[in-house]
Picture 1 (tube, rainbow, N blue to C red):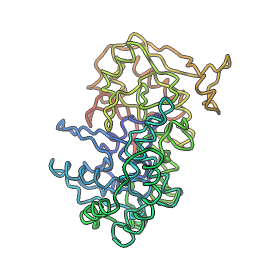
Picture 2: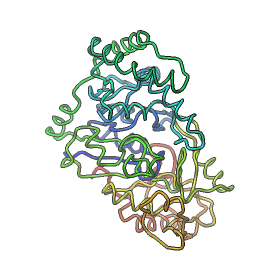
Picture 3: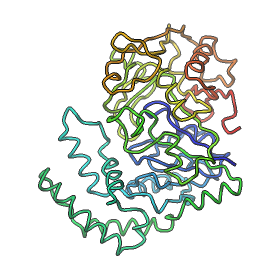
Picture 4: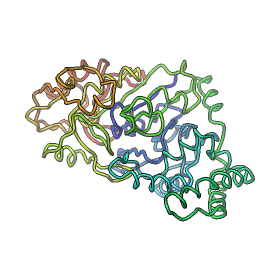
Length: 429
């Protein structure tokens, strides 16, 4: 069986967790391949229970799927263990979790540097969550990182800690006037984490290769989204990893020839957390209406999300960059009750119209949206389960997005619940 990749097609928070949870009973492995606990997936179960997942793959709520944290993820062990304990208390079996030995760990110095550097940037700040994600990836690239496998060898862990804190403490103390981090305290703390996590740390690459050889279904779940990709997003207002479909192979060890389906998820409107360009952003009462009705507050941070209309330039870019074969549009129900629904079909950039994403950061900041206005609908669509049951204007809206983005829309979310969807095509077929 081929591997299937799920990615966000906007700036994150599109509802990827709901899609993973919905398909979880039909797949054998759910793999998280990028990001850290700066991401959050919200899943609502059929009995109405709400789960906020941060490091755990959304497949944790599926009874049979083996859940994997891949090598491309940076892990805060304290956060992961708290999440495991929270799920266990609610009756969720987490014994199926496997952790790549090659995944890098978030350490106390990463969190400290993340917070202090962001404060010193002032108005030029990126808008990070302050959870140490960027510094952890920075140490990974600098070959100074500490990996999950190091928890299995106290001697190696101690040596690496002493080496890295020799430099980081100088920066914290001499540059930022912050207290140095104690090696012994961190070492002992992480030995405690090691005791609880050691049985989960394995060679996940080999396990996934064997699974594919045995015709198992491997589902690769992205965190963040296309426009937050380190290389292809709105740099520098991006995350520190590659959440696009190509990043799934790097972050899991699965070869690209095994991936034959890419599912993209986008909201029926758009949201963004943190700083950076957002051409269709609304600063008026309508923006607040979308925020309140859509519950647009960060799963991880609680920060209010910026809101705006659907941007088909971004949608088409995501389809082409990721090779999206199936698009899922979530939260269509939030648009019910509007007299008309704007869709951004292009940008005006210094008097020039463009259907495509600008090449430069400067042009993107200057881009203003050009809208088509589609008639709205007033009906409650939460009970719709087939495309034909949707109001004609809602159908027309979906068909317009499909044409503008350049790929088929296979599923439409009409409510927060697991079953509140309109399915047009089988996402795994």
